[in-house]
Picture 1: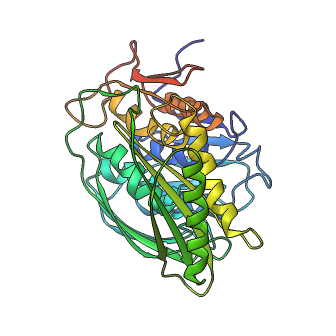
Picture 2: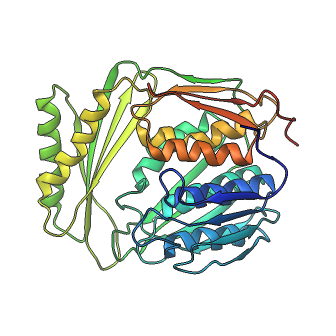
Length: 363
């Protein structure tokens, strides 16, 4: 297979791989960073319903807001989109995701372009604790420490929680300019388990529900020989209710996070046990990173390998993951379309992100 053209527009098929919204979000970030326009067809073809949903449209509008970018076809339900990036401008932005669209996913989409442009401040409103998305505590305790290793920094300030389906949550992110990048990032093993923290959240509901969630999680961990500290926290929220459990596992070399969201009719105890089941699956693997962080760390790793993060780059990242997901391999495909990098994902979970040997130097 010939090497992709890394100078012209990028053509993407939204039905490739996992066929979800990750392809669009990553393309928006990378387009703003590289200055390369893109077209995407068959957007979210493997999701029901397919096409752009309001939360994905919010990412397009957010990318336009922080730059002078333009787009064609950006409408709810659209299956095709054309995006022409503009210069990213450091500044203060207030963005509404709407209903229970994910503010953490919007933040991750816009974080890298703003950091490379000198920083900025985002106030994001929408969902903060949602299924199928990193919840706000995951950003603060797992994702942020990971990107700091690449000289990327932000401070997050939580205001109120937003649960599905109403949303209404809000947080503010102060994004710094680039710091000093590493010479190499290597995370082949997580090391020994050192500490586990269970946090059970409720908004608009009795704290006793949080206690039941936490007790179930603590008991499920104890059955597996793991002791944990437990905290039950009420969350400020608009006039609607929600619950969540977040389990943070500290290892010798890494951290991992696992969450479960309450639903109407779902017993509190089931929420706690669901979060712990994810911990158990991770502990049964040999990976250094949980499957979600493995996917999310690919962007800073690729930026480092492409020479975009400063004088110490290009440089290589190597890590192992608990599970190779379609999200991971699809994300790797998108990154290699935009940047001169080589991403190797072995079935064993070994992942290497390196400069492409025959690629020209990044501008």
